[in-house]
Amino acid sequence: MRETLTLESMVTRSYMSRREAEQQSFHLLATVLIPAVAILLQVLLPRISPRLAIVDLPLIVTLFFAVSRRSPIAGTITGAAIGLLQDLLSGMPVGVNGMAKSVVGYAAASLGSRIDVENSATRAVLTFGFSLMQSVLLYLILRHLLEIHGFHVLWLHELVRAVVNLLVGIPVYLLLDRWKRQE
Amino acid sequence: MEFVTRFKNALFLVTVLLAQAIALAMQVRGPATGTEPTGERVRLIRLWSIAAVSPFERAAHAISSGVRYTWFNYIDLRHARQENDALKRQIAQMRLDEAAIAEDALQDRRLQAMLQFRQRYVGSTVAAQVIGASASDQSHILTLDKGSNDGLKPDMAVISPDGIIGKIREVGPTTSLVVEINDQTSGAGVILESTRIRGILRGTVAGRVQIGNLTADSRIKPGEHVLTSGGDQVYPRGLPVGVIEKIEPDPDHQPYMAISVKPAADLNRVEEVLVITGMQSELSDQAQQDLLAAQAKRASDMSAEKLPGIHDGQPQDGAAAAGSAGSPAATQESVKVPRPIPVIHPDRYSPGATPPASNLTPGGASLPQQNPVPADSGKSSSAAPAQQETQ
Image 1: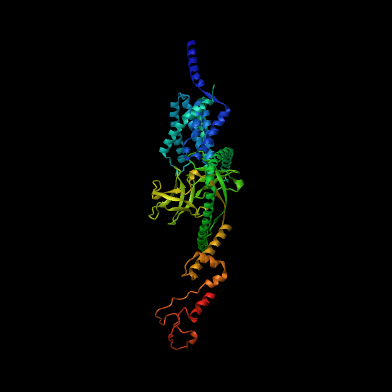
Image 2: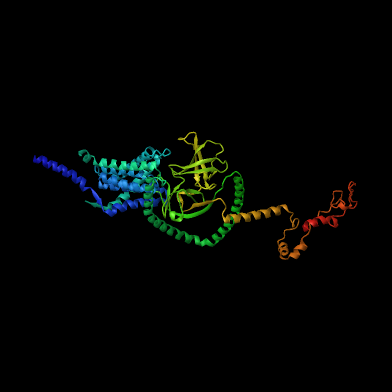
């Protein structure tokens, strides 16, 4: 009985320690400022060069917070908030990016609690995959939920976007790691 | 309860998605026209967001503009005076051209008035600067630094000197959102310049501009200019839109063609724009003055072409002309009435061969004078031209 309890407590501790030891939190200021700056840059960068519009900084920030916190609820909230703000500033129906980024935040946080996401290679793969996932979600929402008939997706363009997000994301993640607060 | 605890994450996600889907459905049902409560709420939230972001956009724009203008001003000032003179000459020439065009427009207006059409001219505009772009690659939106405080309203046309840019969608007190013509949700009535075929211009997902409601027509060729038709009640008629770039079958909408148009204005690098805030049925005062000046000039040109020139047959000596222009008396003396060239073998058709009308009798034979007076020596022959001259 005692051995069973010890084993159970060890398993629990092991599971909790892995999950909790790697769970990171952020200062409230960083939680608010980083997404705000990302969205602001997303608005300003295309003014410098229209080609920079291909980078999705709000997505990169959503992924960063989701995999760092490893809480699907927190990931969902972060994705929804960033996506809704992006919708408000892009003239699109409010909820399009909100829904897509909610799902992305949830999925990234769920995946982050299962695999090691501190590795740059893992982060790169995650960014690439979730960028494509967001493109698919946006297509489904705009084409099938809102029934915009003339809407098309240039999949090659979305592939290029995923690669660009991957390339931009790695240094951005390293920069944002400095704001982490280990719990 | 256990179910909720176990699947709380997934349930939370579903709740969030459901809430957003409902919000989307309400927006689609009642678009942001300002009449629907949902549309109005979304519009307000959107305007608040833009208002919150716009100070940062203004600051960034001011900094980048400052740096850019400081550098370019330094470069440009080196030739500013010469450039200024050249531009003044260009403006003078353009005003003359504009007046000539305005005259044609006036004629067109008269014809349209006969057909009970009502021509509308750009009455007033507000200049604005672009301070922000869209936060998403899926839309092509610009943020302007002017809003309802400056008289801007939704659905006003936004243009640049090169061509149309788009129309205003949302207006806040100090900022406004412009949807560009290459946005997927935009539309504009256009007309092809030479063939006069009308179409509807729309944006594509790739940020291009297309006319998609025309069937194959051999008259439509790449390179043809596209103008606004004025049928959409947003853009005034006749503004440049772009040039036809490519014509190909539209795979999604057979048998229509996808006519790609290269916008006249560079939509990716718009800095300053003009918002058309008012239309009028009359030309502006300046345009009317230019028109009158052009009409007067044209009338004098036509008179000069039709009347015989006083210097015909004389050498165009600039010094002589200057001297004669100096004193009117000298002008009177130097002006000679044109005389016919003396003939070598006179006949009855020669100048002076016909007797004066006072010597003729009704029913009598008109005999030619036996000794016609040379044109340059007789007084009778020069009487008529002299009378013409005095008149």
